Length: 114
Length: 112
Image (cartoon, rainbow over all chains, first blue to last red; front, side):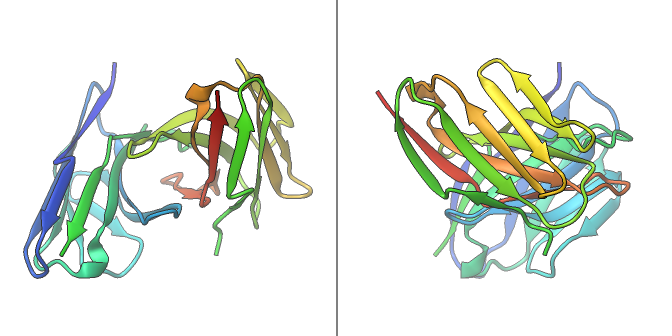
């Protein structure tokens, strides 16, 4: 069966510090990978998606970047965090080639920037 | 914006009652999906309904889709306290990545 792991679960970072959130998927090959952000009481905003190693598409201009160094690894990064980067970050995957778009989510990473 | 809108934003009911949540969207879809999110957790896929389907059931869940009105509803029958969560609709507008656009969610509270 497929599993998705996301870490760290919680972190508190000062403004201007770097960020690295990591996500790995097991039990499937060549998944589509996604990073979403969820502000308090809001829906999910798609930040990045990837259809393959080294292929990253950005949905919104921002202070964040994403990388996919391996087939089942997706990393969200920032060189210098802003207060507005605080939020709940969710990694997700979907099956490559399928058009249903059904997503499987990790447990999320709550980021607080002070 | 292609974002969907759910209503109500919050719903509080007693155990055993039915809960109905609605979702509206703006342009044609391939399919519409409903997800559940327990507080502070990731989202879990509940049910998918395709654009050529009008109704779908899964256990105590019933989803309807009206493409002429661009709306969908999620009905949870005989609710339980464990159903307390936020529920999101998500629209698949197609495209090679099949990206989903999520609504803002309905926060359901089921009181024992």
